[in-house]
Length: 244
Image (cartoon, rainbow, N blue to C red; front, side, top):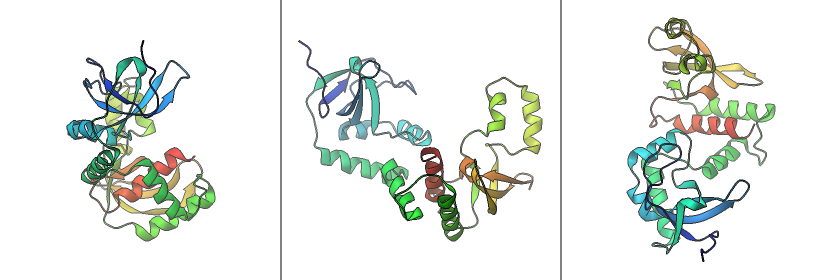
């Protein structure tokens, strides 16, 4: 008789199971069940143990962080795992995650929310006019110049071209006139007016041709993760993406 998987159980990924997003082989990965979702089938959230985290390829961790995923967690169908015995203590997991976070400059969602609460000096983290003003004041005080930015992801006008809907030659022509997510910009200043939908705006100068643009800060990130402004802008992007 098959035993029912419960929160707290240790499970091991079955042979041949691949990551649903990146399709790398996860056979034998092991962790503890932290959540169970039975809305459509039975899916379980697994917090990887310290052994799996230690063996996880660097490219996997980097890709997860780049896409905004938590590399230490994974949702899988119950059919993709087997019950097993734990092979470490929770303290070992926490210590390994702390070491990896420091190595890759990763801040967890909980830590980001705490950072935002401190910036806003409020338990109300909703994206509203009052909090936009608070974030603007904080950024004005703490941004370090010079600061080089690039696109966090493709800009909205570029999507039809990147998906092959519109003509590629036209795309290349327009990129000479419009800002592209592949460009690199020097941050000039924060704009005084905050857009109701796009949030805080910044004036930037494209490094290649010195063209000046006004862009939503939400669409940008620091070129170098070691930039002193990196986490500051990451906090703002996380806030805009999760508390609207």
